[in-house]
Length: 248
Image (cartoon, rainbow, N blue to C red; front, top):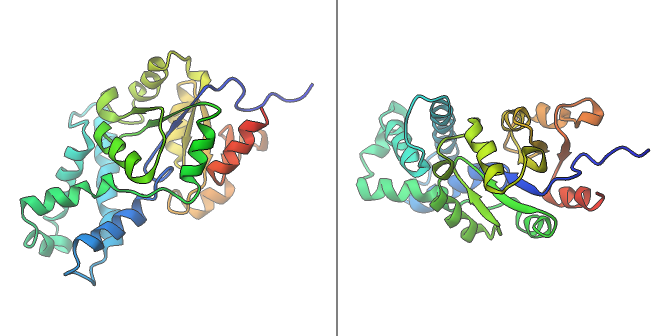
């Protein structure tokens, strides 16, 4: 008897967005340069990385119940203001008034997809429901979808589901709203911590190798369960995921 396909029965693909679907680091770095032509020598890549680290810290705290905004635009602005108080970036605080800070905060609405993203999503949409399962807020995700041509069937966000990953409200809430049991949903992410949480709540898991996410060693050593690993499927692109689903 042939082995059962690892994604047999999956009706919905739930996507992490930042890093998995879009290149947040490259996009923010580029946008910051465009918004600040008077600062050509600024290390915007470093700035983007520190901003993102603040996001990881705060969303994890809120997911654990410490309280805080579930609208990432509000959270990004709070982190930005904190970043500008640090010695490394204080010179920017002197240049950026309220209007500029609001403008800078919205760079996260204009993140470009990886080369395989748009075509891959359109193909995957033919085989399953495709939805975001992101900490981003609804307006951010909708703006990003329009900017990067991301054809979501539905958007699940932190402000809609009322928390951040890895809180169970996120994974189980999305499945419930799709009228599906968790095992008929698959989490698609470039972050193992996200997939581990999804698996703990009964979802299938798909790891996507992306060059800016996880360490190079982790990416190269990632394996599926059949190969002794911890996730159901490992792919290098959405196009590869299309091929795997076609074999069901």
